[in-house]
Amino acid sequence: MDISERILKYLSNSENVDTLKLASEFNEDHQKIVGAVKSIEALEMVISEAVKSTKWELTDEGHSVASAGSHEAVLYRGIPEEGILQAEVMKKVPNAKVGFSKAMSLGWIFIDKSGGAPIVKRKVSSIQDIVQENLNEIKKGIDNLAENVRNDYKKRKLLQEITLKSFILRKGPQFATTIKKLETDLTSEMILSGSWKTLQFKPYNFDALGQPPECGNLHPLLKVRSEFREIFLEMGFEEMPTNQYIESSFWNFDALFQPQQHPARDAHDTFFISSPASTTQFPMDYLERVKKVHSEGGFGSQGYRYEWKIEEAQKNLLRTHTTAVSARMLYQLAQQNTFTPRKYFSIDKVFRNETLDATHLAEFQQVEGVVAARGLGLADLISLLDAFFRRLGFHRLQFKPAYNPYTEPSMEIFAYHEGLGKWIEIGNSGVFRPEMLLPMGLPEDVSVIAWGLSLERPTMIKYGLNNIRDLVGPKVDLQMVQNNPICRLDK
Ligand code: FB9
Image 1 (cartoon, rainbow, N blue to C red):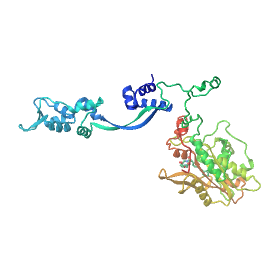
Image 2 (cartoon, rainbow, N blue to C red):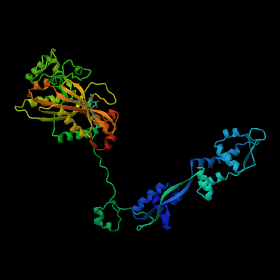
Image 3 (cartoon, helix red, strand yellow):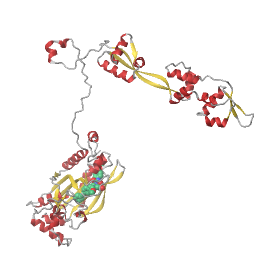
Image 4 (cartoon, rainbow, N blue to C red):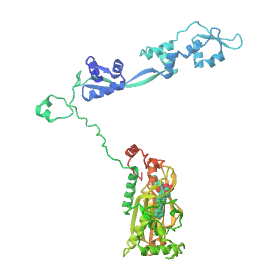
């Protein structure tokens, strides 16, 4: 017979019963009794009322006294017939300090100082360890202790009073000693045969939660990317097409006025493609102007004065920044007959041949904003950065002069992060150089301001991750992907 039916049988012979009593009678765990009660209560077969009761039970020390004897009894038994030096017995016997004073007050022992050093001797030939006997009675559930004795044991931390939550059961409106199988579905057969008239149906539980739907979950990076995309779109930016990871060195470096001997163009920092190793399709008139501005200067610049080689510009690589895409977009903008101001953004992968560590992989997602208009300057860049990062919840920015080959001036961006309680670097920015913009054909009074940051850093801070491998790669905990909350960058 299962527990539910045993409870119903028991209740058929009594008005009410406490679940604690049932647990003791059935020798079952109280929680199992409560679980069974909840299921038959849902069928209205019983009614339960929550009650609180208190009970005295042994502490850990109480259990050790119940098995080994009280401290005073242990001390008494530790004294040999001839007695023992007081200092020795205090060292030898556990809890001797408590045991000694109790044994003295009970008249079990005395101290003989006649021979100089105090010697502890037995005063009686036998003792009755009442404390141990009382505690073992309580262990059996028999509690006849006098109040003063109980308080003494509580004071000695042998007993503790605990509060018990249980339920008083009584018969419900649908009480029966057997549980009728309740139908959970009304079928066509029941309707046709008319059996539904005599069957009992399980009541609907409208409070029951639905099964969480098995569905996919957005990766934290994608959640943060959506937030960034929203911010850019609400600021009137349009997204650049970044679906081409392989780029030519021309667009990734030369178009940005990054000289061919720059260390970033070395194989230690850049992933070059072996096949196809090079590209030959370029806007050749534009390429010639780039070659000239690198090698001889022009547009007011003295250039780098080195022998610029097309073979270097033709090398294919994995783009090292999305600024390569910005260059393509700005060149395209320059081909218009009439210049129109534009605001572009991109969020996509870039690749760098870097030393891997806890926060760096060989790729990361770069976030980049670009604004092209007549007469823009550093003040416009600073106010734009303030407006952008304010939407990320940053209200205190600081800027530090920096260097980029393609922007002058350039600034590193820092913000005070309230949550971390410190200033953190949040990106880099600058005004694209004329040596980059004028060879494209943009009007002389058009300037372009831009800035960049990564997607991984804000995501790791937002979701409290310290190692990039907990965010991307084969070791990512998919439970983290399922459990992590929605992303609110400004909160
Ligand atoms: O993302 C970065 N930090 C950051 C950003 C947001 C953020 O948000 C908070 C919690 C909500 C927190 C931190 N950084 C840029 C700064 C540092 O993390 C830095 O150590 C790592 N940087 C990357 C480059 O590493 C090789 C982050 C990445 C970066 C740096 C510069 C650019 C883009 C990405 C750029 C640019 C640029 C400059 C001028 C013109 C056009 C583009």
